[in-house]
Every structure is written in C-alpha cells, then in structure tokens.
Amino acid sequence: MKKLLIIGSLLLTIGLANADPTAERGWYYYEDPQTTIPQTESSPKVQYPSWTAYNDAVKREFEEIQDRAIYNPTPENVQAYNQALRSITNNAVRFGMLTTTQNWQDPKSGLATAAPNGAGLQMDLDNQRKQIGDIVRRYAIFYFVGNNCKYCAVEANELKRLEYTYKITVRVISLDGTTVPQYPTPTEDKGISQKLGVNAPGELLAFDSTNNKTTVLGYGYIHFDQIVQRLQTLFITGTADWSNYLKQQDPVMIDK
Image 1 (cartoon, helix red, strand yellow):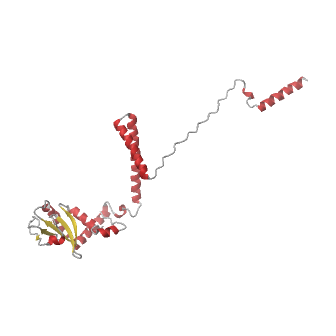
Image 2: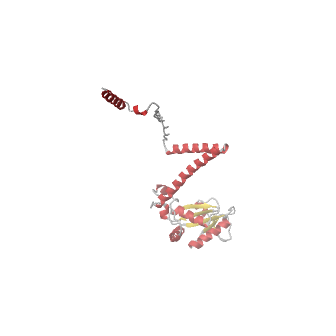
Image 3: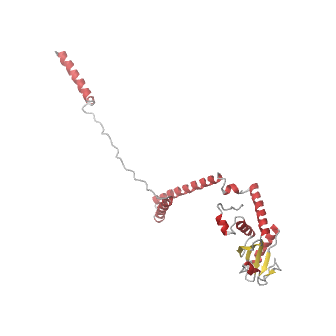
C-alpha cells in the first residue's frame, strides 16, 4: 500500500511539472518582463516639385545657419555652419569632378577639339593664322581717324602690327585732315565715311567688296590680339551675320 502511495505521488509531481513549465524554478525565481520597443513613426520626407525648388530650400536653410553663426557665434552655431558649408562644398566638388570627367569622355566637348599645349596647340595656332590671313585678304580693313579720337595714335601701332603679320594694308581714312605718326598721309574722307556708315573717329571695320557689306570690329583702343579674336568671332563663328548665326544648330567654336 505504501509503495502505491509513493508511486502515485511521483506521478502527480511529474504531471504537475509537465503542466507548468515554471514549476521547477522555485518560489524565489523572478523573470524580467519582456521589453517592447515602441514603434516611432518616421517623419515623411518633404517632396519638392523640382530640383530648383529643392535648391531654393537648401539655400534658405544654409542662409539661416550662416546668419545664426554670424550674429550668435556660439561654438555650436559655428560648428553647424562649418558642417553645412562642408556639405555644400563637397557637392560642388563632386559636380565639378564629374563634369570634368564627362568632358574627357565626350567626343563633342571643347576639350576634344582644342589643345591646351604642345604640338596640338601649335597646330591650332597655325590654323588660326591661316584663317585670319584668309579673312583679312577677303575683307578690306578700314580705320577712321579724327581730331577727337583719343586712342587713334596708339591704335595705329596695333594696325601696323596687323599689316606686318598678315602682309596686308589697312586703309586709314582721315575724317577731318587729322594724321597720326604711323600713317602720315591718310586717305581723305571725301564721302567714304558716309558710304560705309561711319559717324565717329576711332572706328575699325571690315568691308566686304563682294556684297558691299561692312562689319564693325570696334571703337577706341583695341589690342592686336583682340583684333584677331574679333575677326575670328565675327567671320569664323559667323556672328557677323546674325540671322544665319541664329539658325545654326551647333554654334561654331573658336580654336585656341
């Protein structure tokens, strides 16, 4: 009988243990409650209708950070300004580097059609001289001197250099009998200025005898290099003829 009671007691204990998994933990057992991490809703990103709108917002935010640092230069505000400036600078550097790289890899970029130095630059300069030589041989170069011309005497030096370099003759016209040392016997006006539409001394122009068309190169003092540059711009790129130039799909670039 005693054995039966012992066996029954053991079976009861085993059954209770299987029914309650915490039965073997004892009276003094304590289990930490499960911690639940609260779900925080992330603030939605501001949607901008365009990159221009985004750029305007960035500018306003940077100006606020900058002004705050200027007028309240605490360590925190100055640090915030430096961080904002660094962010903007990094973006600008990244853009500049990628732009340069893209130009390297684009066969239509200016870098692919012009040489900055070396034999390529020399070839471009030789082509430039030939182009300018062809232009000044086609177009007659006129220069009008007069008593009220401030720079005529020094401009004459640049015209002499133009003549020497390209083996041409600049036609110097005196509006009122005035002479300059480099051109002691200029051509008298006698209606030439009126025919070419000249109203003031110091005007430098190119005249195309094939169509009687004049193109003004400028007034006052124009350095030799600038004269060459203007001849290129007007007659190689085609800006002398506005209507045709505006119709061009791809503007002509000037060689260095």
